[in-house]
Length: 193
Image 1: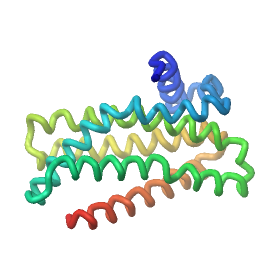
Image 2: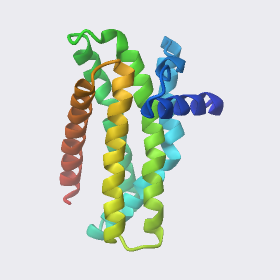
Image 3: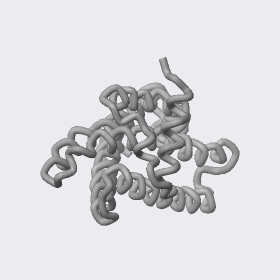
């Protein structure tokens, strides 16, 4: 069962960390229970992610009329879960040699709740596509700006979660971004797009 007060508290802490308010990460539930409960962020983000999956599936179906929307949505869902969960064991392996193993739980909890927040921000960007053409230049530019802002927010959050330098946080986000792009290219290649 999702406790909405708990979820809203953690999303607010994420927003506070992104905007640079001190102590925001420490106000999160950083216990072992908090670690596992942070994965309920997937369920919190599900309505927004589902909306984006359907919109993407409809766009991809235009390119592949023989494919149904349901298999495309299922593929989007699997891809999203892989991108959400795959970095976690990688973080566990990378943080220890950097002397930041004690910040692993902080990073995963903050990242999970941030992904829920970012899912709704991205879904909001898709809403205008319900009434405007997919190839609208202004919407594409807005999408690019939004992605840059999300990357900047992710760097700020990662820096707060790791209590590290900006350069280390940027390296984490750059690595995650590169892996996500590679996975997206592989996924689109499997679809033949």
